[in-house]
Length: 124
Image 1 (cartoon, rainbow, N blue to C red):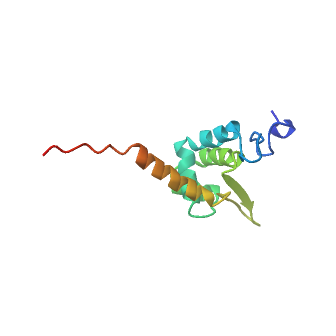
Image 2: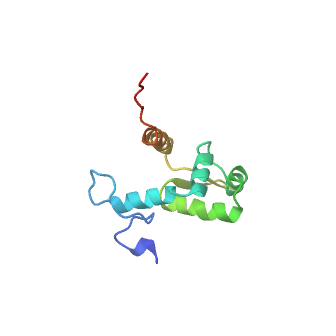
Image 3: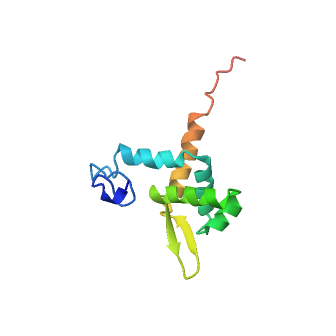
């Protein structure tokens, strides 16, 4: 299926937002969070938080195979988290926006608050 020919999708394959004030509809969010719900992709994103890297550098840093890194990077490019940057001799991948760091921090805070055990009353 050629995503560029479907008028309901953006050029990145994301569903077009239905309400400009909301930024994105549920389908768009589903695609983003679905792509973030994978350990390999999260490891790749954490590696790219350090800066732009080649496929080989990402593979070395994460312990994943080159083939696996290539596939996962394409998925991250498709959902808008990562963008490629070509230089004269290399292709680098970097976070599409530094706001991913903010999203990661919010997720950490959310998880810490969600799994925090409630205080038990003390009866001394």
